[in-house]
Image (cartoon, rainbow, N blue to C red; front, side):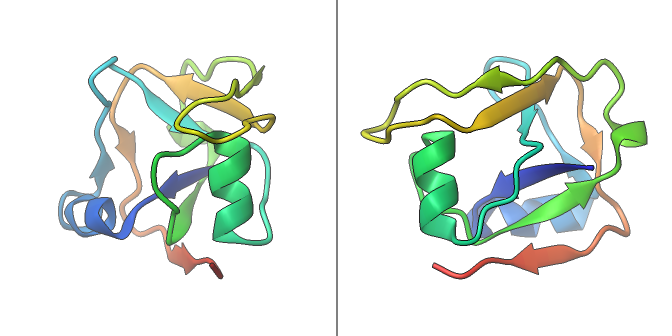
Length: 102
């Protein structure tokens, strides 16, 4: 499985539509890594904001999944985690939301 981190603000819209829509660059990012805390995920994935949780997305819903790449420093975060992406909306309907500790 690949784990998709998201913010609370994004969670509401995702749960209403059942889809994670691509960002401005046309991609939906996921990570194959698990993180113990939201702070660790923010640092390793170089996220602008601290995530509040994630959906575990089965690989079958991630057609065309890229190979893992190292996350470079960005947003004042060091990076070093791994990310992958798809170029389409991702169906997360009926997938549970997992809260993460700060």
